[in-house]
Length: 257
Image (cartoon, rainbow, N blue to C red):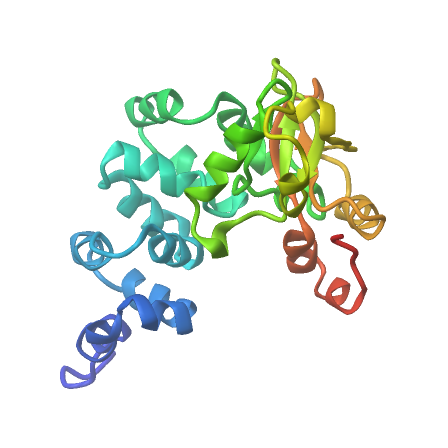
């Protein structure tokens, strides 16, 4: 049994680490921050997380035990919770979604994209090493009939570090049709439509292997749409997700341009 004057992990974290759980600290040591927060009562963790930028909250919730992360998520405002849920690693997001109460899931379903809700519902069924387990929702898409002027206008609202290498082009029914490299938009007339200048894209079903996405990226495709069996886009996988799934892939040369 622990002696009274020997602090528990949670107690030590609270007294020693928590004053340093700031934006910069989380950016530098997300695993340590997540462990410290996980050792707190939910209301204490929530009090520390709520003032932070969404990016930092996401970083912590991704690394916290699912039950603790879900307890925090349940207490956030619905729109904030939906945004954070859509940016978590898909496996973690699926666990947190399932941990919500039925009324909370129903509320999330009204705030989240229908295809993402489907991804959340099936994320635990995808086999290890599949593109579904690595997909990200952090991508920008436009319909084939979107004019270049509208695309450029949207991109101008993003911080420079958030600009995507390429944008996905979707059909009216939400299926992947092609991609447009962001850097090339300036070379087209502003009244051109996305569908007329896009490059055809190859998609993968969520259960297919990450190695297949790696091959497409090596062939020069900057992002690979991940779809359900009916071809509806659930998310995308890029060089970053491929490298995270297989660290050895970092040693390979990928072509983005």
